[in-house]
Length: 474
Image 1 (cartoon, rainbow, N blue to C red):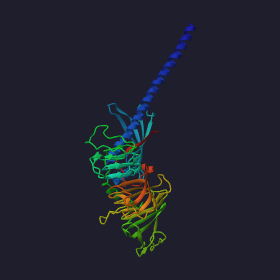
Image 2 (cartoon, rainbow, N blue to C red):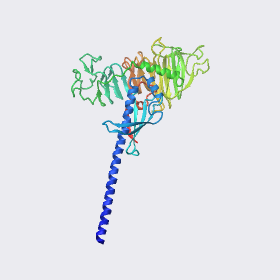
Image 3 (cartoon, helix red, strand yellow):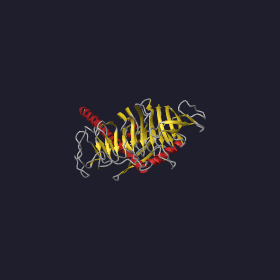
Image 4 (cartoon, rainbow, N blue to C red):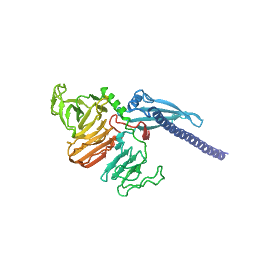
């Protein structure tokens, strides 16, 4: 009996331990299941917010998008809870809570944090955080509405896109895209060719009727290291007029700086975190050099924009550079200098309804950053052309994202031979950009500024669709 009792106690202890272990494993399995469901609920919150953005922002102008965020979008003013319902008829499963950080002034980035849990295990929470971004036009090394032709000496870092077609005979380190499947290349006679094609090395064959079967377009890593894609969606240059008007409103609101149409425009000289501005009185209409400046009170003129005094009878005024804001000139603008610790866009546009479209001129001296980071970003936006003046330095360097809405980014027609052009930034040109013809730069370096990917110039044009570009579980 004693032996039997001992055996029964041992067996009972083992059985109880096994039952406890099985029970704990069942509970753990159930907890893990609910925790996985909580993760799915949290992700559902992210995709709900992407749907919400698409339905509230798609197709809107920059000003309308700013108004959307200012009005207090879901999750911006405080956490917003939403019940998650099983799509297969299982009823309400749990809740996701959205915390949203709206884009700062001039930014295209928002952060959405979604925390999910189930009603069955409310303590088993999972949190997913994503970054949404509206792709900016500053993400391209070259972006154009018209045909672009790159010669065999071209060595380009950064994405390239044309709405019309591209011939690329050099070396492209990043993706090259076109909005057309095929076109007739105006640089030579011949048949219809691919929307992105090359005559570098082996010549691409003529393009058959689209859509073509897989394998029709040759793989050319010797030219297109980052690949080529066509047709893709076009970039809408005509919609920029509305963006220019929004930038003017921003500048007139007092946070940026607005300059009226006095004289022939403004010369803007950046000086780290401030800038000098002078009213241009007369300039040469071929080489775009400036000969005279108006005094601030309009009583006379000055020969220089520096050292002329800052009083009413002087020709110079100094202003702080307001970070993440716009300097808007209702006329032509000449821009140069050094920027330190500021993100700023300079806009030249005549929106008065009379007179010619405005231009931006660069090259009176270099335009540089003190260092390359998201803290130092310059955008130059012209209603018509962005032009390098003929008197630019022999080795000209420009750090900026530049945009010519209805004209071209290029050089003056009478420029003599120069040594080199180093362009660190992005080039958006409605017409084909050009930096050499009878004269110009013998050597040209085009380096995409990677900071422009996530830190575009303030109010630089963007797409209207938000995409997820960073995902993490917290």
